[in-house]
Length: 129
Image 1 (cartoon, rainbow, N blue to C red):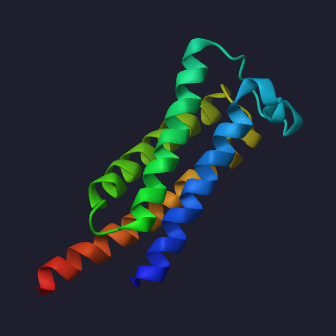
Image 2 (cartoon, one colour):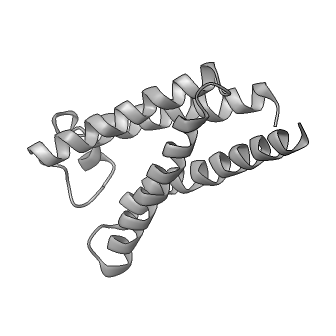
Image 3 (cartoon, rainbow, N blue to C red):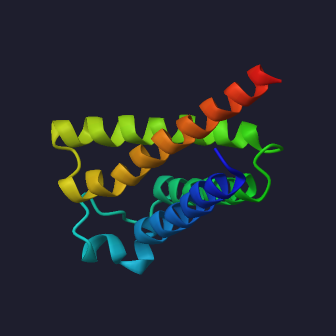
């Protein structure tokens, strides 16, 4: 994977996370406008979640800026995205969240695949050295 491809993946992942945080930040009302259910209510747990989503976005920007030095953040990002997908999709299958929420999390699924491809390419580079 080229440095440019890596930067596109991780900078766009940062933007995705910032937008997700904005959508899920209760005072914006964006989740309601998009038909996401259940709606965030702005409690402490949801506020911590929104903050964590944004912080992961900062981490993805760091990876985009310097992929080799921040590979650990990419690994953590893959784990985080897989956890989000597992939790939200399990709720979606049981009726706890609606389709729009699952659609939003499909971005996390896509980025988890891209992060895995990137990390695998780095493993191959290390093995070749």
